[in-house]
Image 1: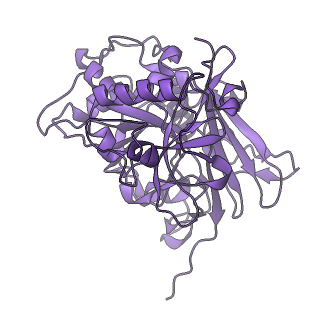
Image 2: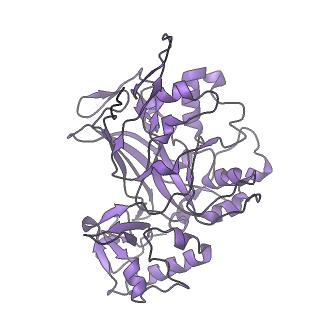
Image 3: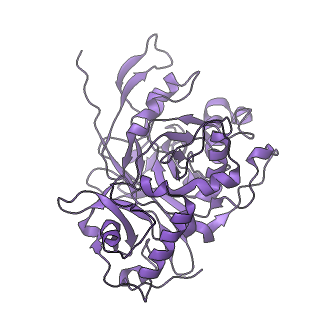
Length: 413
């Protein structure tokens, strides 16, 4: 597919992440107005609430009176396709030039959907091998179940925040290997996890599993996701039940929901399996996407350094497989559920999606372009995730997923 032309001039550039081919969904506000649903097109936003009010966009029932996309998601895939078709027509080069547009530079972005539940997976093989090798050696790097099952844990929906939200360094219990007792205080090994988040747009019933194909149809769209991680807190607390406070304090997402329809030309298959998956996890078609991903780090007031570059096609399990496994027990999936892919890392050192891997547990510090070194994140550092699927003269972008670290709060004795 090549670039689709729009009457919005800025959407026709190969450099914009938001051409007519994309049409991602977000929530924005201007001035003192309430947050409302919008669609990114070039450097502009189509105000869907006003477009619906004026009849420029018509759906079977009003969908954009609220401040998130949940009501629209609940209408199902047929209505999703209908809206995309209408948007492609009215924003196309012969479309409706009277549509209500707002400059992105004048808008403030908000959470695009209400997060019902959050589940994070551990589904990147390179990441799992790196982390396992550090702690258990290469011969025992992968747990016995890893090649058979997408491993995950239930996180906190309450701490999912929009890009640009400051991240407060967490406090928690840690224990040095030679210490008799743990201590309580600020995390000293604060990290990122470069991920892609999948948003569930249609629900499943309690007790009713779904196939991988059905799960793929349930996914409304994708966002960049940074599951911030307190590695020292996690090391002390995770046995035997896994991550808890080390992952509960913050998860950042990018502001624009990119749809499977926009990403369709970039579908690709999961890798060859060392062992066959059980039939309920078999994929009927390619379920991953060729999305280039990158991470930058910027110390306070200084230029950013690109510290990692990788691709979502490195994942071992797709979002559809993760969702199908999640529902396989009969667990009900809800509109607004968020599924984290797990850290996306590639085979090269430069493609590692966490500082834990990039510095090999702090043994090999990073040197930034500023000349400073890092093993983990310091107060004042800004971490930014970026991603785009790149086609013939166009790209499908997500916007950035960024957060700046602020000092931990002090506890009074």
